[in-house]
Length: 471
Ligand SMILES: Cc1cc2nc3c(=O)[nH]c(=O)nc-3n(C[C@H](O)[C@H](O)[C@H](O)COP(=O)(O)OP(=O)(O)OC[C@H]3O[C@@H](n4cnc5c(N)ncnc54)[C@H](O)[C@@H]3O)c2cc1C
Ligand SMILES: NC(=O)c1ccc[n+]([C@@H]2O[C@H](COP(=O)([O-])OP(=O)(O)OC[C@H]3O[C@@H](n4cnc5c(N)ncnc54)[C@H](OP(=O)(O)O)[C@@H]3O)[C@@H](O)[C@H]2O)c1
Image 1 (tube, rainbow, N blue to C red):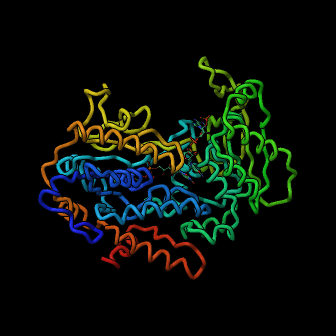
Image 2: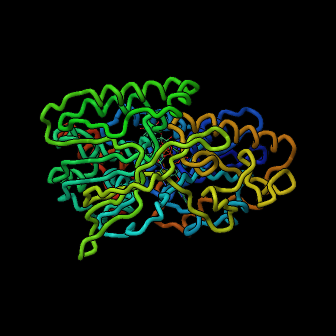
Image 3: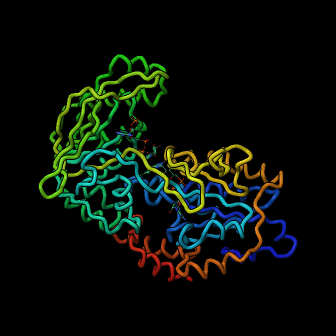
């Protein structure tokens, strides 16, 4: 039976229907599902699995709470979920509840869209001191990801350093700087709202190893920093060196505009706001310094200069000049990284599932080394970069490979079709789309009295209980 009330076709029709399992209900998984369901010949039925009881991946657990418009993209995903040939199996984890082999026994197509769950490390002394955190964890904590609810961030700190010059680093800095009144109307997790209300952080440094021409920010996000209610901005080391000035001439509009915005910030007088957000360029952390109790007390940085590599790209080179920044909180925000799954080829250098244009493949790569019927899309295919929409095109490319293989008879040949039985046996807490709708209703109702979009359920048991309110 389909979850949307329609019976799954039986007899000849069922034989003609190709079954696809998509693992990961983030943007890439949902775009792939919609694209497969739109194919007229051959027809696909799609089962979307996620280890969380909730769908949407980083749209729920990554996108900042004060960016509600961006989250409205989920309306398109909900439309996909209403398709009669779609089923959702939430709270079912590949690698623990079910295996790759289970899937290959039951599906013609297995598509991994699991994202990149962990962080890249700096690899410097002191990184494990108390008060040193991965941005991935902080982001998941303030967004109510149930794996991270129990984390503690000591926000009594006065000085925070965020390492990295990408949009995630900027999200982290902005979340630390937002006024409680700006956060109260959002879906930030309640435990985070409480901690951020009491925060003592007054000085936030965004540390970039290269210069303003090389930041990975997007313009609207950088402009938003200039409108913070509680924070004045400072820019340190923002002058363009000769190499960057020449290099910038060949860059896109975003890079030019970023430089203009940062130059305008550098000229702005302070206006007496209680918090300072500082853009500090051309500096790399080389050590986190600890106090006698094992807590971070500062960051030792090395000043950098821009140098050209042989291929013309620009790198940060240490100058041998060091200084110390005070900091009781340090967030490394230098990118995400994929986690290997049992039995699925993993490129450890790049931190993603080994693939050739979306077809899972072995180390040799190429046509002869492809795993039939196994595909990959999204961040775990190409690495952790790109906005939500980037995943649409990425999934289209993978679906193109699937259709080529379907036409050439190169898909997997499953031997059984007892998925509901498998899930019932292995994952007794599995959540259907109706279960997610029940969670959604509970969260929205809890938010309504205070004008919030929702109050997120951030504990596993609370999510399971809410899912059960509509069987
Ligand atoms: C902090 C942050 C903020 C962002 N903000 C924005 C923004 O404002 N605007 C924008 O356009 N883009 C934003 N992005 C980028 C955007 O979120 C990504 O491009 C997009 O989410 C990647 O989609 P994905 O489906 O590949 O991965 P994900 O969104 O990570 O989805 C992967 C899914 O797979 C599931 N999963 C993982 N392992 C398993 C397993 N073993 N079994 C079953 N399920 C599993 C996970 O639970 C998750 O639901 C942001 C990214 C981050 C990190
Ligand atoms: N609002 C939004 O649209 C939004 C919000 C969040 C995220 N996103 C998207 O999600 C993707 C991931 O974002 P992200 O911020 O995690 O990654 P990112 O954009 O790749 O930025 C990573 C940053 O870390 C720096 N870095 C890497 N290694 C470093 C090291 N060892 N020491 C110091 N700095 C180092 C990089 O500098 P170098 O350039 O010198 O390598 C870069 O500034 C991006 O595409 C982003 O646009 C979008």
